[in-house]
Image (cartoon, rainbow, N blue to C red; front, side):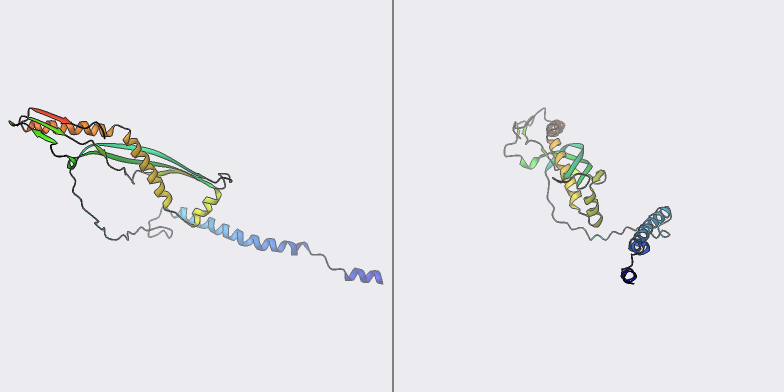
Length: 234
């Protein structure tokens, strides 16, 4: 009798169905979420070709910008003598010191297109910069050296060509967007184009064009001899 009682008092073993129940309970919502996302993506692609008013996933762009504010006006006394067009590919990479690039890191290729203008500022003509003889047949002009405008980066033709992101960066970009990332690319592209313009001979071309323009203009006014001088230093 004692042996039979000990067997009856032993706790029952859990059935396989009870142990698997929690896994099924977690798996079912996950499958439903994945299926819902897949269904939405398929529906969005299928309705992509429909007109906007028939497509529930279609987007509408509205311009809610305010009026333009005029901040200042300044008079210019300069001659735009030359202009250069430039293109640069910015390869910007950000990595973590102790994490692989596949986990944490970002690399962006940005194509920047812009122009740089070279000009001669006539407002910097000093006293005695223009000398004319008594019979007005000879003129001597001392001009300042040409200068470069700041880079004018074209937003229509400048774009991000490719982006590689680690897993953590992909997850972070999904929940937030940082406009400073684009701004940094534009700033770097402008700086590189400006440096290239300084070394391109654009200012020398502007000096030569300004000299030729003044010589032709003054000779058309009756001057037989026209001399245009420029200082050796910038």
